Length: 302
Length: 313
Image (cartoon, rainbow over the protein chains, first blue to last red):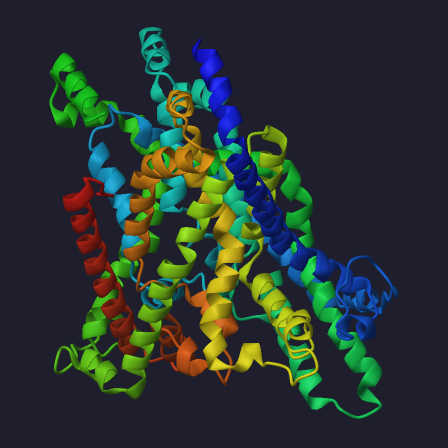
């Protein structure tokens, strides 16, 4: 009888619900368009003749292909130096971050850790209060790591937020009984962590690697503050300079001789954006599942 | 958790010191992160005292003389014309973000939750947080090409007329800043609410359906109340960051013609501190900012605790 009633109510309200459904679907499609189109447009503009791009046509598919921008971009050595730097900083930085965060996250997840609450506070406090950029800058100067790779990777090596996500993961996924059983067998904390906890925690390692690697790849301001030499600058700084330079070019050039150069400058902006964002966008579909997992772990207990 | 720890203590009956010694391996695991916290978080906090000193880089923190009067750099900040402007800009951009940007991920999560089929739901979610991976430099570059005089937006809105100079007009700065923030982080911020929505027991919906509730009524009387605690928690966090507007993006979007609205406390600290090397002065400005921010956070937390029993501490 209850089933019958459900059926009936569904029938009654289906009109209004259909409208509601339609609105939801339309809004969601719109949201996706607004998110995807700018990215898609940049990719299209990077291979389209700038004249077509500037004509105001809403680009939907490649037309009037013009690849001069990519040729110039690929031949521009400072960009590749910067690319190399960014890869180096990202790899080294992510490794250091993992070594600092994963064991600490595990230690903080142990309810029998003496002084646990205080230690957790030591880390969470850094999320809400800090010395600010000048004292940090002076610290880096006095450590003698200014203008070295360490100035890029060490200040951001640990994020309290990531540490808490990591702790929550270990709390909920390494059963206490496992530890008890291992202890009875004479297993110490090191062995338990390396041989039992780590092997069952590949998810959190992937999540942390992803979070730290993206943050590292996208670092801009720290490079501006803590690095000096042009050949040490990461991709983001070089990208920024190129985009700014192009805008300056654009303003200064109005003569006929400048037309080709300006045309190229216009397109270069798009090419450089694509080249610098491409690695993340290419790996994104493969890693996004970890990303959602990580945020959800953080959300549940954060 | 605390209870468990207490139980463990009772069982073993050992002193705290003995237990700490026995857990030395856990402390070793904690050591790298702790070292980081000391060197890159707490030592700079100690460095804040240069806000009260006439810091000279050669003399170091200890040997530099105390400022005379001690609050010299704070008074100096408030006597500049930029001080009130920067404070106002910081607060206005934060408040506008809370009003316009904060509700969007909540609404998005509620709508997405209405899509029953798994695959499209997953796809939309995946798309929604893709921009979170873009760096600020890339996002600001995209904004600048989209909103330039010859950009797509101008072609769409200013048909025929003279183009709107979005990126160099002060009135448009906050709109672009907050709008691109929404674009960047809506999906990411929504994950938390989506997780809260998936945790709602299907029993509620079943009962509501039997009572003849429409889809909208189910959202209104089940979904919204159920995710309210999460929403309030996120709101406290956001209010508690009211003075901490990221300097990176504002700095990237800044240009000569919009500083009147785009100069925030944080960008100002960077400029006077690192570009003109007035270390003590810039530190004082930064410290003022952090302290006010921290007070607001504690207050927001206190109020939320009083009215809804939710808190972050």
